[in-house]
Length: 407
Image 1: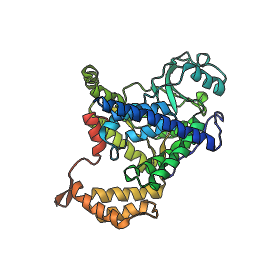
Image 2: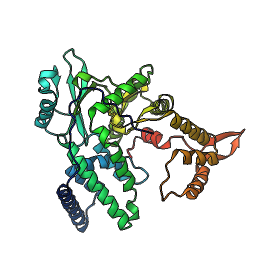
Image 3: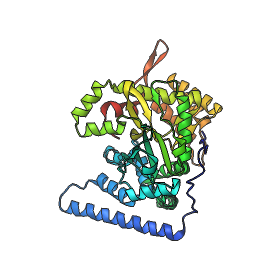
Image 4: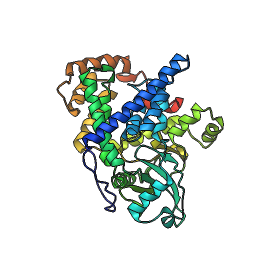
């Protein structure tokens, strides 16, 4: 898979910056250490008083205080159901769209820098109170001069330099984890790699707009898939203006369940929402995008999926998108056929063909693990030569929507 990198749109907003300097990184390490010490002291005080420690909440507060790419790191952690306990995933869910926002003055400053005008001069109306806020930017509701409702994403000032500094610090942290053989934290390496891989695309909203436009073209004839229109004349490297999709996100659905908001849940059910059908549409859209067109939304976390009438799926935040070459698509189809056909040997062969080996790769261990897990995936024996699965093909996503418990 390769990343798609078109840069259509106005040639503005390219926030430049060099590599993070030594003193910047040192200062950041001191700040991280200070916040970590403060949270550890609070935990110790609560423990001494016999009070609940609430470690996940302390972690959330630390990440919000540190801000920058550590917030993005926390977002990635919120979806790591295999590496983190459930209570951590539940608490970190708020980092997906409820990060402390930047001030109205900062929003105004971005508009003046990018388009040389205040939002009030451009839009019929503009709400400075964001409807969602995350690590890189925040989203505001606005109305175009012709009355069209739009969502306007505004980037946090100076975020590029912050990310460069924090990525250097996180890379140092991973080296320390491996140097001291802290095996319980080895999973951090893959998270940091993922953060590094997608950061550049996410920091340029013109790239995100191009991904959105391409996905929108591919979804034009599909009633179960809705991608917002991009308003290129009001899009720069730090401002992205798109059609507003009205509806709750899957993250909102999780919160309704958490807060036992039966009124909101009943209203959603009365509108025709069926969880199983919605999940099926999410999967169908992803498979279609990946295997038929080769382009897909690669950041399907709960805050990026909008529940629309008819159980259609609305998509937002296209900073992370993937592109599969024809050869990669062919191999992926073969991999899926091997899995669906209950053929672990072919699954192993196809998996090794699409993966990149590293010095520590353990192919014999991978083969043993696949054969061992086959007993968990399939019911034995097959009936009339047809494979029977023990559970849903996508159990994690299905469980998260049906149970509405964030993880």
